[in-house]
Picture (cartoon, rainbow, N blue to C red):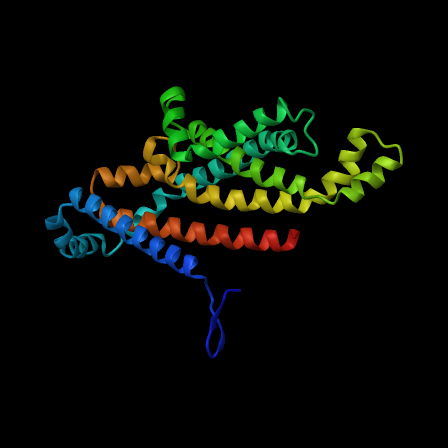
Length: 271
């Protein structure tokens, strides 16, 4: 707490003179960075198009309304495919993520020098690539279809579930582990009776939460040929059928809202 001595007494100051100068220097750097970013944005922006954006948006809305609700009957099967992509991809991701998480956690890994870095690399590699990029690569390798979408969701889910789960494993109460080990239990018995019961609620919540995220992500995988309702969206975009696109957007919105509600209810029931 800086205090300045004056003739009339001591005056409390929130910051020292050095801290005040550093604060001003930080603001100057921030303003300079903002100006630089603004200059970069101006170099790559055609402001004539920006000024015409309100008129273009109004024209697009006029062509999108009213929605072609009769198109809905063609969307139920793609929507079901989308839900299956999210669900099967999440399950496959869980199957791989659980052992990877136990290998990555400091208190359960068999080797902190070799095995743990490999497990952490798997988690980081999975999280560093977006599911849309995974889908694009898999469509190139496997061809278009639901399999590419399922694997793309799974590969993305491994990193998300694995990271949160191994952090939950590292945060368990070690006294319970020591108590079970003191009874003479083996390593698998310690895992079964001391570690798994503690991380099971977190694991259930993480899995449901990831499924909710995958519902949203799987709706756009069809844009790169991975099946689902995104394929119908891509087809409508190619033909500029804006009234159909409005129906697809509405159905996606309802699906995401319902999945969010289901996810919240399940997490509340589990946790």
